[in-house]
Image 1 (cartoon, rainbow, N blue to C red):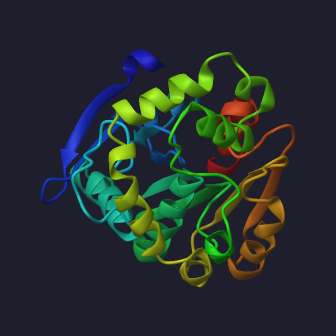
Image 2: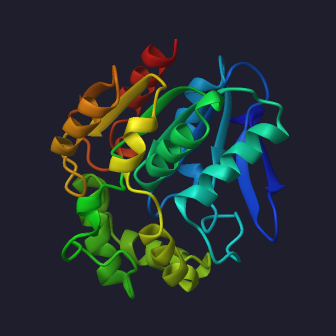
Amino acid sequence: MVSSMKTSSLAIGGDNVLSYIFVEEAPAIVIIHGVGGHKEDWIGVAQALSDTRRVFCVDMLGFGESSKCGDDLSMTVQSAAIKALLDAHNVAQADVVGNSVGGWVAATFAATYPERIRRLVLIDVAGFRAMFEGQPPVNFDPDNGDQMQQLIDITINPKIAKMPGLAQRAFDAYVASGEKAISATWGKSLFASPRLEDLMPKIGAPTLLLWGADDRLVPSALTDVFCRQIAGARMLLIPDAGHFPQIDQPDAVIAALNEFMD
């Protein structure tokens, strides 16, 4: 129920401010958006979960309404911000869900603060070593609407990706939000972050891997390493979904989250 959700922010040290929306009651779940996303992308999923769970949807540092002034936006810093959020709301343990780079944050959190996580859900997670080798498939810091279209094409359902004017609006929002202005800091922070292969042996929480079967950015075959290195990890492919299943197939994501977390 969107009407029960509140918007807030939290100062977490220095000039960093974390922006988030949340529901106050019930067991806690933290949801972290992916590359190019924001907390509002998850409102539909949060609405479906909020009857039984205390939902927090955050803007990662450097995105949306969270601060963009720090010189370190690494996964280590991002996961510390999630811990600060839980501390501020007196949440001892939470389920943590992350998509794309948000999944990288979630995995870092699970490996760094194992006592604070109940269950972990990684959705088309980024952060594998292979992603930093060779030439990237697209420019992740687009300079115009055409380059934004290329990024959208590789991440979003084709039915949505080709909506007239979408790419230009997305590029304009990318510039207006201040996210493009800190792209160099963001890129440096990604390279400085621990890789998933180093994090996985440290993850002990029950883990669900949700993957869009049609993900062109992070192929589902990469999940094999998770299933080998995280004891008891479960894998679920979502048909007709790309890198953002919560956008392409929200009902399937909601059903999977409800089943896994109950």
